[in-house]
Amino acid sequence: MSGGLLALLDDVAALAKLAAVTIDDAAAQAVKASAKAAGVVIDDAAVTPRYVTGLAAKRELPIIGRIALGSLKNKVLILLPAALLLSEFLPWSITPLLMIGGLYLCFEGYEKIHHMLTHSAADDAGKLAAEAVQDSKALEDQKVSGAIRTDFILSAEIMAIALATIDAPDVVTRAIVLFVVAIFITVGVYGAVALIVKADDIGLRLAERNGPISGPVGRALVKGMPPFLRLLSLVGTLAMLWVGGGILLHGAAGYGFAWPEQTIHHIAEAVAGVFPIAGAVVSWLVSATFAAIVGLIAGAIVALAVSPFLGHDAKKDASAAH
Image 1 (cartoon, rainbow, N blue to C red):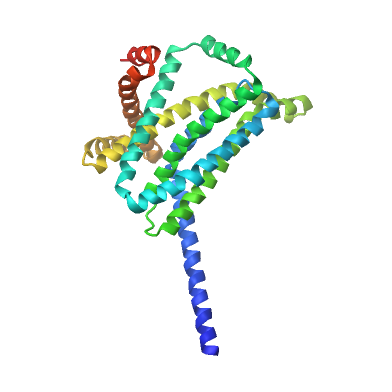
Image 2: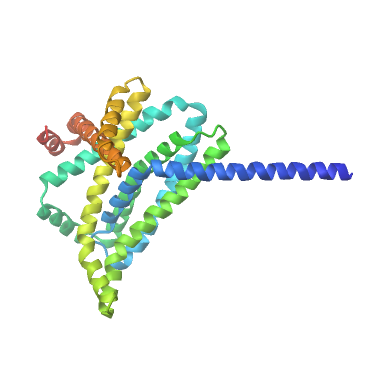
């Protein structure tokens, strides 16, 4: 009897150790996967604040909460099961799907760059003025719905990139890693977005106190947020291009066309060799720049290809950069 009990305890201990190892492995891989998806995460954080523009300040946080909940549903209820099914039954499909998503990111990045170059601030102000006359509830629902649709594409890229970095053979560990990535990135992105959106309100309150520290900090926040948001939007656009371009380069290498990715790597390493102190940073900057150029070219090609299906204005916009 005691022998059976000891054997049972040994089995429980072995299972506990296995669970601990699995959790540790999942945590490590979740961090790695989240880091790989950093470019898309930056874009996600940069895109979202524009969806609360023109709406009442008291509705900003509830709107962000609605978008965050929709994002979490996208990742956990739709994309996570789909990713596991693909990895289990159609693993060959992950790379082409990832490349299709990369093309979409390139297209979106190109469209944003084109918009920056061809539209004035007056055009954007006119759009905001037109939105202001709409019913506030309908406008809020419209913006939330648009944000969740955009998030679905970005979340699909995040989950696909995460899945591609997981080297665990068992489906349980893959599921845990993807779930942790979904929670971690959603909380991180929308927590950061909430802070960004409310930073000017926080700054205004600090400025009203007018203390020796709170006053200058508050005024700096109020004055600094508009240019910061513009910079964040630019960084998000560039992130779309370098992530999309990088996905295309890596995918092409997987299909036997490795020379573009290898050439960029060799150039980056050569340039980094000139800067022994910050070599890793320089190498990444060079690689990201070339990937962004590839992404911009790919995005322009996609824009030209789809312009006949998007109407006369889109065709004219796509042709303008040619």
